[in-house]
Image (tube, rainbow, N blue to C red):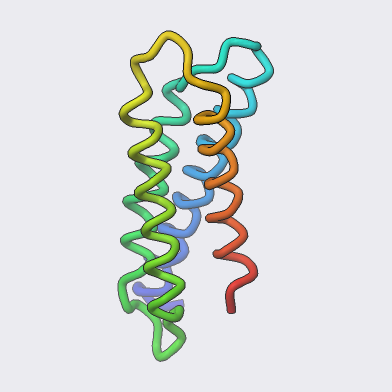
Length: 116
């Protein structure tokens, strides 16, 4: 395994941790009954955005994802980050807004998995 592949795998690992923080934090918060943005969700969205940008760099030999897929994932990640960041200090977040964050997070993962 070369250095570039090791870097890609580290970024992918961190990206999955960001997903786990974002989705896990949202589910944990939803189960408490008080719907708000918690630090795990904020950090998860930041990690997802930063590592996603890193993963979109042309690090592989000819096996790059389609540009349309990368743009779609970037737009979804930016939407999630903006929704989380600007709602983080509210005592309680609108239920629809919160569920939209969860839905966009799941949609972003679906794009990653199913778009070939």
